[in-house]
Length: 220
Image (cartoon, rainbow, N blue to C red; front, side, top):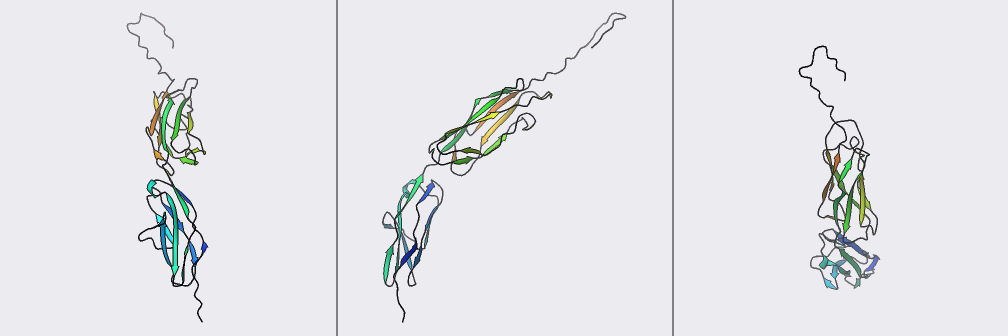
């Protein structure tokens, strides 16, 4: 004797959060007499072709925010999952400016970058950076490490440029901070900024003696 059982849920879908352009997914585990048929719904409207136990939404947009559920059926009954919410957010933009665009070996005096987050301040994110320019990290200035960690609610971060006073005659050099792509943010404008490092080393003077008098004596 075969006993037919209607669908029941062993695992319900869970709410999800995603930024615009990311992927969101929902899944369920159901039990009951096979075959089990699945139909996902958005705001109680069936989604065409979404008939598996997992719903994957690629490149989500703001219009896809709302309530999702799945109807599972078999020969003897139906079951509808708990509705869950997909929250879709616009990712924050990250920009950088040189708020103190000069640093000097003399002193030395520091320069400064300010990295700013505009938009959604809530999630903690790590912002990737690349440091370029003509100055050499570890030789001309203390190396700047990344990524830059933004805590929840934090909207800006200060990056100090600490020169190293050497004895090399180098001329003025540059330190360029570039924001690079990452997860949970998009590049703002400007995404790159420059601090100029001023050298304090002087070239030894050149001395030329022309038409010296007889028996003249010179020292350096």
